[in-house]
Length: 321
Ligand code: ADP
Ligand code: MG
Image: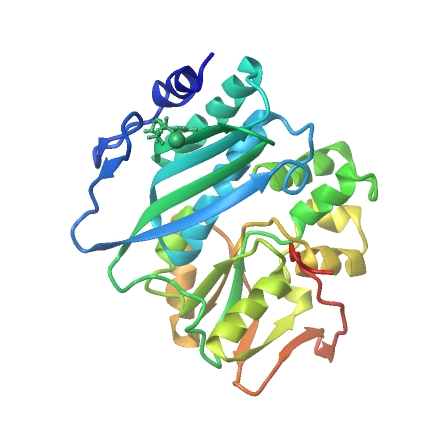
């Protein structure tokens, strides 16, 4: 099967269609329309075999994660996803692999009403690069740089589950089957917080998605906003699976330094707390206040029940030593 029939059979014929795409897969470029009054948010992420997923990961899960991590970046800016393009490097032509992979891409596209509008297909080591495009009403993007001293610090969902899942796959931690399944699902098929991101546009002062670890990503916000923060560890949202599988110290390590959670970490002015809580209830999503932003000369401080807490800050850095 040629490159062209791979594209046609697995990507073009299955692609979810949107009205704002006047030309999708098949020409030299895709042609799309941006709605009046909206800005375009654009992001790219690459997943490489052996770095971002183990060799034996099912192709459908690789596809889901590749889309999810990109949509999570859009969510962190408050963007509503619209289109993706897919650059695929494949070691061999494997129909079974392609079938499962393209089904994974299409399931995500249908779920989030996103259209696959183009890409590239080449022969080489297995790697997947997705570029995602989304809309934000002009001037309403959520950036990392506008947190203010006094803002409350929130995180969506629960934190550390992906790190717990990774530790379980590496046989470093034993878990009940149901807890293991939950943590693996969180590791392999993260849910980008798309709805929450759009909901936060008029409420949050800053936002980031947690990909490298809560502390590491919080530092990006604090650096960009020139602020410090206090995080109260007893308020960290830990899943039932986490609480019933590891001790508190280990849970904090996973929650603070583990990557791949794809939850949103955001800051909200104290006076908008009520508005946030109402919006969370209306959208049926959860977020927990875990601390507060402090002044420009402060550092990031961790507290447990009011006492200073020491921990190593790690986070994932591809070029780290
Ligand atoms: P070109 O040689 O002009 O770059 P290609 O042969 O690479 O064109 O691609 C043909 C068409 O198929 C283009 O519209 C391209 O965007 C699309 N395409 C290629 N690979 C993929 C893929 N993996 N997923 C989706 N669309 C793809
Ligand atoms: Mg090409």
